[in-house]
Image (cartoon, rainbow over all chains, first blue to last red; front, side):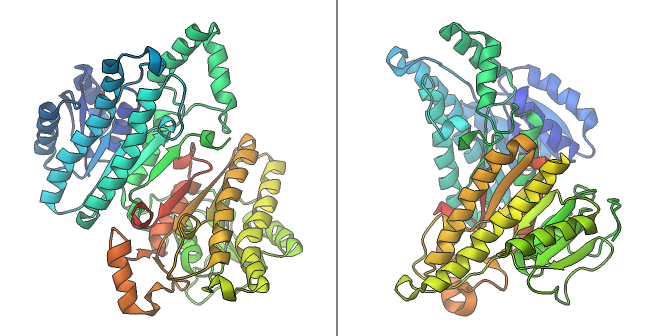
Length: 256
Length: 268
């Protein structure tokens, strides 16, 4: 298994890369931050069989993304799986108070990087002729709207239909495309959002955490390992008849 | 039947990839409809990954059923409350503790245009496909909650719960499977505080005895080419692989979801 994970310097992307490497995959970690090289270095000794490399690139930039995926494929000897995890939050303001460039930046990074990464990897996978799997990272907030989250919600909802369309286009090549939609995850991006909600509403961070957990039937935040387990399954042969889907990993939060 | 959960070499067919040996070690599984089709494939996969399994079915196990010290069978009709209660108790005795994995795979499929559909046939299908998972799920969860143990339920929905089918009219079946998805979400929310997860798979056209699509091979092949992006039938092993993932701790933050295993047919 030769896998590429974007946005992999920390958080969910790092957790996914750690898991895939532990399963014996060769993994290329791509991130806009230089720390991705240190992250790859940390993971490397844990890898059973494969190699682990870090690539610094902005996957929301067309030229840079194409070059990074090509570099990853060159280093790993091909690409069997791509996890489009790169993304940003924000702008956490109501539409009437949001500058277009701030709205557009979120859509460009979250949706644009999924498009660019998928396109570059799919071209390589089709050329290889041995199938493959692409996993996009959506969100519970791509399945329901939230006040102050228009840009983020729209970007993640768009990823679900990008996935859907790509699945149909790539099925003849035995390339499966699915989205994992995490719920409230124990990540810095989520804590930052709760801090900003607390500041905006005159409440405490702890009150915001409590409020979120009251809406999660399993009564806890998701972890990187939760998402990594689902992705490891989805790119494996155990999901060989699953394509075009958006699968929630959210502790049941979508339900009530 | 041995209570030991230690993984043993298994001759059972693995799923679509080499089964992570021991992922289900120590788990006690109850599988309704476990003597054929997706149920039987899941029994094999659960055993291959180290679980003990009790099958619950009106029918006896067939000659191709796995045998050995980690498999047993109880005969029961899933539509009968007293039979279900007795069977779940007997399963717990055979397993050495209450089952902590439940697969509700017992089901019936009948094609009948709605204008010709009798109330009796509607009731029979709803009884097996929807009342059954409710009754077995209730008894399963009650025993786990009383013991203070976590567990996982997987129900079998269908792509027919998500989209209509003009070629194989089956309103009673489709409604029963849509009901299963609502039941699954409700199980997830009501039993999450007890550490019990509930999810569903929605199989598409799967190569099992229940499949009618290929009764007319030419029409079936045409459907696969036009209606299934991956352009082939799925196998029971491919569905079993998803079921066992959902039952395993790999899916510990998934509850209330319904995963189509359909080669992309509902993505069209």
